Image (cartoon, rainbow, N blue to C red):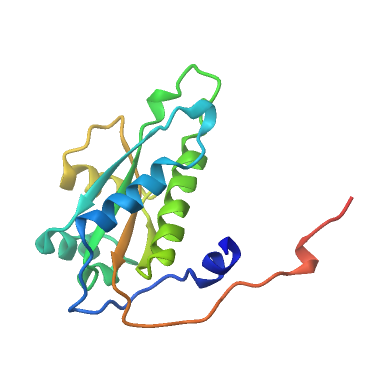
Length: 170
């Protein structure tokens, strides 16, 4: 079953303009994110849910690859908190942790027949700084990515595939 969800997940760039994503669905996505593994269970993340159409429309103005935000019903900004790990066993693992949380959102959304598109913010300084300004984030918080979420207006089959040439058996 999980394998089927993994195969179903795609980056969706067109959303149904009449689609609705409920607060309950968003909470389910966030719960999935917060169930992701993290180094020493530090959970160095927080999330911003963007439902305001004016704000969604501003994201493509600074992010070259986020045009789909203009049609998405909402977005989730994953914000990393690297200082939570500073000086601790899990130091520097926040990128892995936030990546796992992001992937959980994508897979949960696919299971709910919602479309998503992961748009990276980190490490592009222009994207991170504009996101900090837009949402009033302090310098110690790292905008990791923004995920478009909506009811898809396109349907694709599985895109990825297994490549034996990329595996070394020992």
